[in-house]
Length: 179
Image (cartoon, one colour):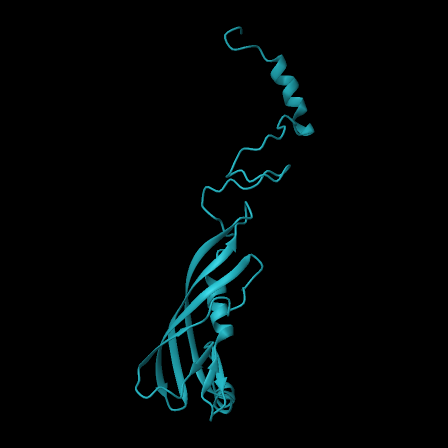
């Protein structure tokens, strides 16, 4: 995504950028696709620096961590950065220590590629373990059936051999009421 700074005359400026469907690459393995992304920015100017704050929104297609089914997930993240020339950035880097995100542009062009910042904003808003729904039952560990769609018919009688001793004790215990 390219932010054109040359077109801005009055500040604060409000800019909205839209990407095409699939223009932003998936940000991690469980993200199957990224739909159109909208970036809404408020931009202030001070000298040759442009201070940009705003939001990044997108509809993603994620893979559920339990049942592996793809589902839609809407994301809204924060974008904050300073756009400046490479020379000015190098000058400030030597003078001050800050934690601001900088993007640079060639002084005559005044175009900034913010694709990586957009991907980062989306990535920060993703759940660590995406679920299609909170009550997702997942998959059977034996046959791989999606337990949300139907119960599997796997044999569940197997007992961990470490618990066999308790089974013997239960057989020896007197029945309730015959004590």
